[in-house]
Image 1 (spheres, rainbow over the protein chains, first blue to last red):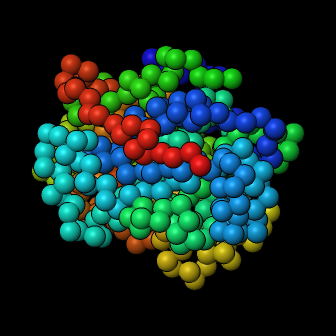
Image 2 (image 1 turned 90 degrees about the vertical axis):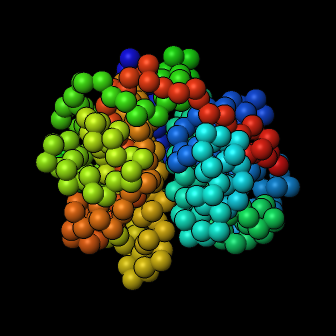
Image 3 (image 1 turned 90 degrees about the horizontal axis):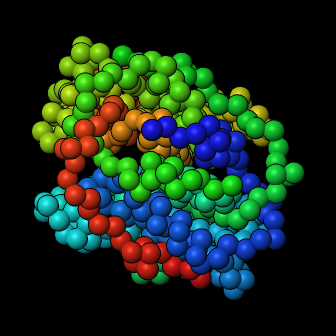
Length: 194
Length: 194
C-alpha cells in the first residue's frame, strides 16, 4: 500500500512551518491522539527517551517567555500550544519493560557519552515523529531551536535528568501569512546510490 | 484535513521494524521518490544537513560489512538497500542558497559545537522523515545504530566533513518473521500538559 497523493501533500509536500496562528485551541484529546501516534515511531532498542511538555496555559507560557530568543518570541507566545521536546538521560531505567527480551539496561548504565548520544538521537527522531503525526491530525507545526536550553530545563525539567532538545509550536496556522517556500538540495547534492 | 485511518496505520500504528526481507529490489526511481518526500521535512533555518548514501550493490555492501555489529550483520547484508544517514559539518556553506533571506551562514561559521549539535539534530530529524517517507511509499524500514561510525565514515564519507549518524535498511519486509510488538510508555509517563 502507498499513501494517496493528498496524504503525501499533507505531511510532506504542502506542509509548511507556521508562525501565525488562528484563534483555535488545541484540546487534550488532540494532544493525546498526537502522542498515541508518535509513540509508535521506531527508536533504538525501543528506548523511547522523549519527554514532552505541552505548554498551553497563559501561566506556563509566561514561564517559557524568558527563555525564548527575540526572533521566536511573538510566534511562540501566540501559539495555542508549544511542545518542549526533551529527552530523559535515565531512559535506560525503562528498558526492562520497553525491551524485555534482552538486558538492554546494561548496554547503557554508567556509559554517560553513549547515554547522551542515544537520548539525543532517539529523542530527536521522536520529535520528528511528533511533527509528522501533528500534520497527520490536521495540526500545523512551527519547530525551532533558538532558546535558552538551561533555563527551560530549570523551569520545566527541574529533576535534572531530562534535557530540552527543541521546541515546536502547535496549532492551526494562517496560510495567508506564509512566505514563499525556500529551496531544497537536489537528490544528487544530498544523496548517492552505490 | 486529517489522514485516513489506513494511512495512520501505514506510517505509525501498524508499521514495524523489519529484519527479514522479501526478494524484491528497490529501484532508483523509488529512492528518488523517497528523497523528494523527505527533503520537505522542516529543519532549522532550512539547513538540510543530511547526506545519504544508499548502499545497494553487492560490492558496496561488502565495504559496509566490516563496520556492522554482529547483531546487525545478517539482516543488513540481506536488505535490498541500506541507507547511511550522515550529516555534513559544512552544511552552513549551503545556507546562502537554502535560507537566502538572512545571513544564516554567519550564525554558524567558526562555531564548532553549534555546528555539530545543529547537524546532528537536524540530520536526525531528516532521518526520521526518511523512515516515514519510506513507509508512505510502501517500503519497510530497519533503522539501527550498532555499527563502527569511524569505519563507515572512512569508507563512505572520506572527505571528512560528513559524519555517519545511523543506518536504515530499506526493502519489503516479510511480515511472517515479525515478533510481537514491544510496549510503549503511556501518555502520562512521557508527557505533561501545563
